[in-house]
Length: 308
Length: 308
Image (cartoon, rainbow over all chains, first blue to last red; front, top):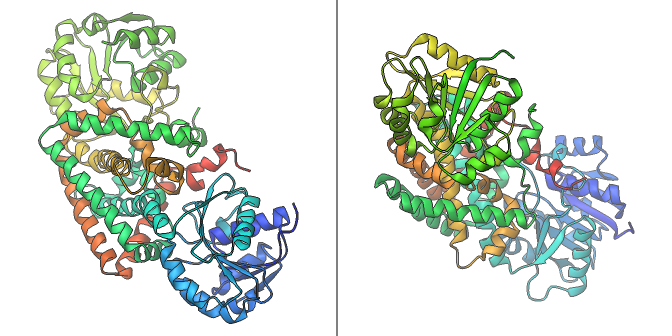
């Protein structure tokens, strides 16, 4: 594939950053890839994995001369990174991020971005429950959506270039208003993670059922939640703090609906339960038809287990 | 493998019943396998799939001369089935079930069981989100737990024979008090399913985020819940109605914990969020160490997708 940018700087080299680095290398999309991490150990690991062509501990040093800067840090750290790199950004450079909340990231970063530099916030909807530079892999973004959230005044040329970048990594690119992005993600991603963390916490705290029983019999449903609840704690703390309003709205709706369901169970209203349990089946079918999940029973885990 | 029972009657031939039938055939555990279903279409399908050696619409006819009767129907139908088959059970026969609630099934079935017939309730912790005779497969029970819930007066010889049966299908067999079973299952299985149904319902009802957006972006977490929420509605309605007390207790705890989390989000208490999000990671690790889930990122779906 052709060179898209002469120099790319990756600020943060966890699951997302390191997956981008691996794709850049595999596809030959940049001549130079400078990697920066505040954590010495992470930076060392990135170098051992040969993820880039240069490794620096300072984000400011990393962005010098870069044509594209991709900030892949927990969303709570976005503002500090923007402030740190701002004086060193090259005129005409594109700065983007990969955070799960967009209005907050724009509010934190945009004010620091100098005239002549193009800041466009973005969010690749890809990842796993694993974290760190070793967790990344080539092809993570293939077939996944990447949502860009341009604002008034965003340069169309820079936007097109960033789209081209994500498409080169195999993503399908969408554009969305930042506030709408945050509402959509609150229901499709943030609420599911919060609920998963919560139920795993509830199970962990029981007195009349032991932890070893919960673990032993977890395959009956519980284990499905533990995957999301194993996601990076710093990332998810920041998501909760930086998409507060949308998350609180979704939590309120969820709790209302749960109270309705709880009441139906208490009063033995089987028809209400049956109606809900039937309706939700259709949602699963649509997700499979849209190619957003595998149709293999049990997520295909049977084929991964030592099953016949 | 040696013949364990001369004649086995399978009452109900959905995911569980048909998986038992397939294993019986593959392993040669019975000389005769009679299959019964109230639904003509299901019975016809079982015959097309050649799951047994005889197909009858009446459960009473099916159990005549049977040495083992396995009732695999929604738990709400257990009492009616017991009443129907009781007069036709052979002296010395073993009757068992596979339902997800045990105290209620025992209360419904045991009073009908005649003297000289051994009733032992059981619950294989196995299954997928699919249902019906086509959903079953050989090896479903392999490596999975099966919990038997004998009561005072249960015949030790019959219990040993039933254990042997499940072990022959590859299960690991545990014994448990029926009430304790219902509490354990309320947290590891019933609450997860109810929560999954609920969140999918909440997402389906939004006005400011469209259903197509929910489906399109579901891979960011939401889709994990849709698998459980695609489970058989009749089965799950009955579970909710027949394990009411334990489920309501778990729901109350879950809601309390969620209110605590919601408050931490509202007041920006990042340390409380971080503490929970870290603790839950350890539960996932234990589940993987116990061999109860695959460690492949994203449930290994990446390897099933058309990913590199």
